[in-house]
Each structure stands twice: as structure tokens, then as C-alpha cells.
Length: 373
Image 1 (cartoon, rainbow, N blue to C red):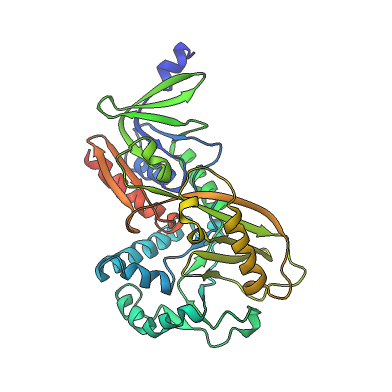
Image 2 (image 1 turned 90 degrees about the vertical axis):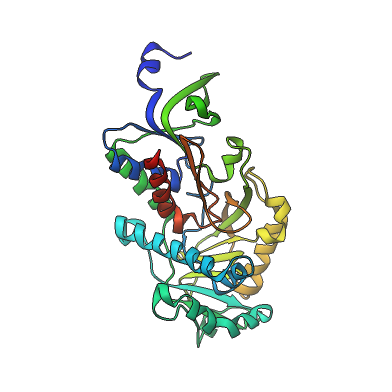
């Protein structure tokens, strides 16, 4: 039961942001900077961000060669270029805003392991470089001349290098967003699960204190990604769970650094403090991973173990020390969904597993929509 003071001081705000991940916090920060006198509240269902913002692999990437080729099967060339540009400019924006040191950003580049099945993709390498030339003004992809010292298994027939990708620390990114939110006077409530939006009354219903608590706002921003359909059922959103594993420290030094892609980008790995971070593989069970329930899919776990033992460390595979899952959101294509659902309710969701790259940028687009309200 709420007190007089709680009802008087805590329930009414100018903007309520539902979702305290990268997009939600970025939206709150940018809105508050535009309107410093307005009150902004962020409601986060978990103790930490609940989707993938602090559970991802920390890839500062915009798409491997085979991923871009797959996108061209679905979208026109102009849309694919626009999507890559959006992601790359998003990465540049957070680096400029927060600094590489604060993000623990490392420009080690991106690498895609090519097997016999993907060798044909290299034949289109020059074509894709030409397609992306307006963004980068120099070739993005090149075949790595020497990779034998990486120690990969015989399935790897080639490695394609991307000079513009990097890695960051997802936890440090969230910490920076928390700090900036606090400095700007944004209020954040964790453990506040929004269960309903009443658009005409601009009310967000939250579970708490064994009762339904009604927060009221002038504007509402939905940034809950895969969880958005629970609030707006009409949305075209498919959740996608992703598994991530980290090994114990290796007894020998890992001979490579960078953001590595495998199996058309569905599998990814990197070197963290001389540990292997390995994740992905949802293409082995799309149906099973189309869920908002956290958990470990044994089929995918076994598939990733096989890659670690046969492809990455064929002679001396380390032991897994920890594993977890995150929840992403997908749609008919990989373009984020930034739009209004009602005059005072707007959303920025469906980031397609690219929240690190486009989270800040997508939040900017959402803030522009909210300004028009």
C-alpha cells in the first residue's frame, strides 16, 4: 500500500522510459539533456538490464561479409548500405561521446572464419567493398594473407579481415550510462516490471508491493526490445535467445585478438583477458530459441563446444567457467523499429542483436519522435 508521500512525489513524470538497457538509458539521457527541467523516470524489470544489454559479447561490429550478403537477399542495396551506415555511425557516436578508455574499446578489427561452405562469398568481396565505399572511402574487407599462427582447425580455409570493427566491455558501457543518467537527474527504478500501458490515460502499470502501481507521464518511451509485445501485442517482434560462454584463463597465451565471426555470423568469439568468450549458435534451433525465458539450450551448447574443440582450439581446448543467456529481438528484417504506437507513446525496439552498435543512435531517433509529441 502506497503512502501519501509516495503518491505525491513518485508517480508523476514528464517522460517514462520502460526498459533500462542501452536504448532506454540512452533515451533518458538524451531527452533530459534537451529538456533539463522535465522529470524522466526509467523503469527496469530486473536488478540489471534484463534483455541483452549487459549479457552480450561486447562486439562493436556492424556485420561480417557473409551477414551483409545475406542481408542483400532480403533488402535492396540502398537499405543494406543504410543499415551498415547506421551501425557504424552508432559506434563512432558512443566512442566520441564516452571515449575509448571508458568503454574499454579496442580497435583490434573483425575477422570472419571461412569454411569450404562460404568460400564463394570471397568472390563478392570487391563488390561489397564497392557497395560500402560511400561510408568508409576505403576497402572494408580483405583476405588475411597469413592466419596459420592462429592455430585454427582444418575446417578454416580462409580468414576475412574487417579493419573497422572492435570490442568493448558491455558492463563498463552500462556503468557509464548509469553515471550519466544520475548526473543528469534521471531517476531509475529497478525491479519495476511494467505490465500494462494505458495509452489514452498515459499510464504505465507496474507490479509492486502486492498491488498494481500506476505511474503517469506526459510521454511514454518503450525500450524493452524482445519484451515489448507484452505491452504492445500488435508488434511484429520475435525474441531470440543467445548463449554466451567464457572459459577459465588459458595456460598459454591466445595468439589472436579481435571480434571473430563464424557460421555466417551466428557464432562469435573473442579473447577476454586470455580467456575465450564464445557465443551464438541459435541458427541450430531457431524455434527453441524464440523465447523470452532465460536458460541454456543443450543442443546449442553442444554445437558451441564442438566449434571450440574442433575449430578454435583443436589441440588444447580450455574448460568453460561460466555461461549465461541474453534475449534479443528480431523481425522480418534487421532494421530497428522506431515509431509511435499512440500520440504520446513511442518505441525503439527490434535491434536484431546489434544493440551495442545502434543503441545510442536508435535512442536519438526515438528522442526526435518524442520531441514532436
